[in-house]
Image (cartoon, rainbow, N blue to C red; front, side, top):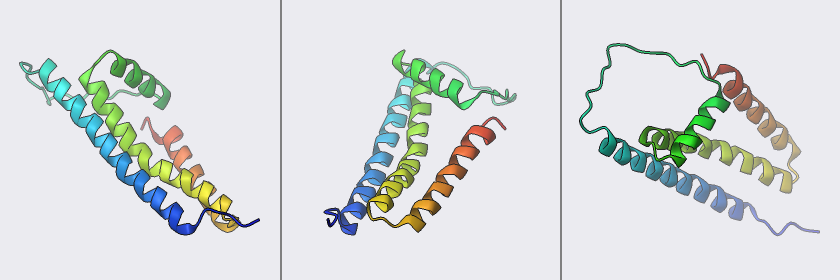
Length: 128
């Protein structure tokens, strides 16, 4: 049985995934910036001290989601940044599916290695 998905179809889907992913992420970040500016328009920002927050990725995502639902501008900005970060990762996952459908197992292995490196760097290198 011949696959009905052609390489051109996969390239089209991946291109749209990247294009719309970036636009959605930027729109969310801009919306968060507008909300943040409305809520903090009279505050002065102090850049003199830097406070490092040593959080896990799960704690950060949990805080971002709860802050987004409560309408916090900085949480919505962070959600936009996370969406922007996830867009190329989704592209890699979609490539894995495409290579699997094409039965190109060498590239399936290479893509799995890339996904492993990304997961390792996210989970073990995030807090440093």
